[in-house]
Amino acid sequence: MRLVNLLIDITPLRESRAFRYAYAARTATVLVTGMLLVAASIQLYDLTASSVAVAALNVSMAVPMGAALIIGGVLSDRYDRRSLMLWSRSVYVASTLLFLLNALLPQPMAWPIYAAAIIGGAASGISVPAMISATPALVGRQHLAAAAALSGLSMQIGGVVGPLLAGALIAGAGLVFCYAIVLAGVVATPLLLRALPPLPPLAPAGGAPSKQGMFHSFIEGFKYMLATPLLRGLLLIDLAAVVFATPLALLPEWGDVVLGLGAEATGALYSAPAAGAVLAAVGSGWTRSQQRPGRIVIGAVLVWGLSIVLLSASTTLYASFLALAFMGAADTISKMMRMALVQKHTPDHLLGRMSSLWMTQSSLGTAAGNMQMGLVSRWFSPSVALLIGGSACFLVGGAYALTSNSLKRIEGGRK
Image (cartoon, rainbow, N blue to C red; front, side, top):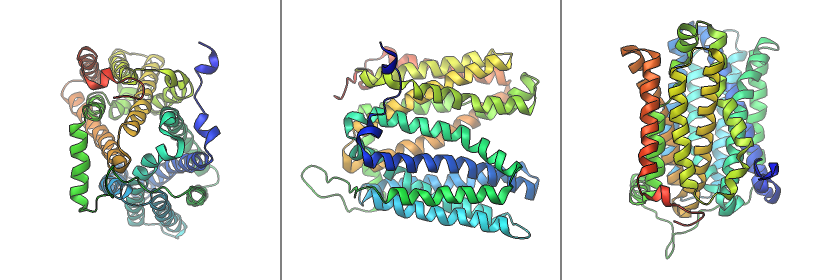
């Protein structure tokens, strides 16, 4: 296999002008979101000297985002997806402006930070399903795996660069300047999205889009997922992996107590999954020719579980970093293949709801996984918690590998 075939496939960027604009908007959003979270967390801690207050900031973003994801999924299957992205990202501009105005006050307050986080979380929840469900129309279903790889790359690079850039700006020019840079990036996003063509959802075969109530529309999408073995398998295998083997809550304790290296080591551990994810995304070109994408998802879950088992036995920063990097790489490969499969095998009029279900499951599953790891660690030890979680994840992947099911049998573009 030639080296060029291992590199990330940039065909969607090369062939689709609309996707180039959408990708630029997504990249800008991911970058400034990472900057904004760090800046708001630092400012809030300076105001309150409380880690609980900082944790509440994440809750303030996550709860409205979870609710908005469900609503946004239904709206994305009813209305023009370009318009939804434009309006939601414009609301996000207002939330970012609130962060900046509060920072400019002689005595900044905590409550505007929470208010801005709530508004921004809800706006993101509306825009994400619209962007994901619009992707097939932008690149064609034959390029969904490549589009997912490119999206994963921008997300992981933003996850590394955004926080580092925010820290450097706050330490240098100051918090207000950091918020100003974030605002500039947020304003650029709807301007880029304006270049997209109209993106209305396609009507289901033989009829017009459903106009039933919001709740019943969501239930319709949920029932479709349950009744479709492939989609159900994709959701369940990822849910098992994140619930059993998400180690992020243990990293501060791992760096400080297990490795005995303190906060500097903890920062390196947090960057390790993103570093592995970037490398996996850059070298994802091999996935474009795979005829059994479901088996790649299963293999990625096996590697994920094994990585956490190896982390449980690591006693040095180098070994721990490598284990977490392998986990991040496996997660990214799994995520890009799952995204492509969901988009390829879901009717267009249900894509918004499937996207919202996938994102909600990922968000809530990750939170549950961190809580599970924290509780088991308290009862036993961090090493035992990681060993149990990693082993459970590996067993789930093994069960899928040994069982004849739709995920294992999926071939190329056919069910």
